[in-house]
Amino acid sequence: RKAMRIVVDARTIVDDPTVITLLQKFEAKYGDMVTVAGEISEATTHFVVSMDARSVTKLTVEYLEACVVGCWVVAPSWLEDSLEHSEEIVEEKYYTAQGHARDDGTTHMGLPENSRIRAIAGKKLFLGQYFVLAPGAKRTDQLMRLVEFAGGTFLDVDEIGSRLSELQTQSQACGTQASQKKMTCVVDSKRLSAMTAEENEQLLALQEGGRIALVNERWLYESCERGQAQLRNNGFYEL
Image 1 (spheres, rainbow, N blue to C red):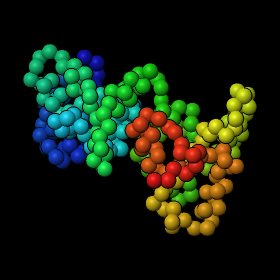
Image 2: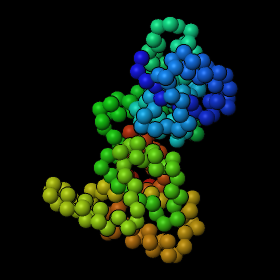
Image 3: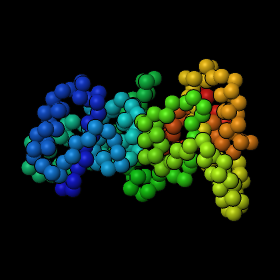
Image 4: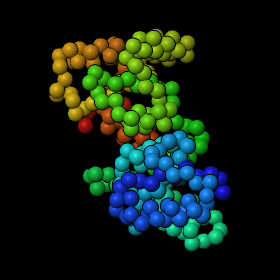
């Protein structure tokens, strides 16, 4: 078996503390082959998360990170069965037909498997796309990790001008229209109503004549969930 870097969902540990014992036994069995980490990274091979009888788990940002990275998303029973059997336990048995439940009660099946297929093929969702944060938007590590795992790049505000010129040159060289945006401005939707007049002016300036798409943070999460980075009317993603 290859080296494993395992992350256990924080909610799963709270709901079922026995997972910690299983993980300790798993480490003892496989020794140096196993590394337990506290957060998802591109080196993560397994994400352990509790699932119901339908193989459905709760939609969280950590779950999205695991899917975007393309690691195995498995239930705690994978740890348990691996300890009980001497032969290698294949992840596919715990992987097919998996899905997640949204806050509205609806379910979406197949994201872990489809995301893994895309990751293996090198088809990253935001590959070649640049992201900036709107004035006052919170630059959270989790948000940045999700974008970067999906192939996107966060820019500082002072880099915007040069990058836009670069994208414009690339568009003209390829014969494509400049309106095909490759730079996205992430707006903190919770702060929109509290924005100052100056911040609103800065936000409008970031649009640079329509060459920057304005989206809120939820668009990022839903794009990762759908596996498609599509804008609604090429404008602010209002929900």
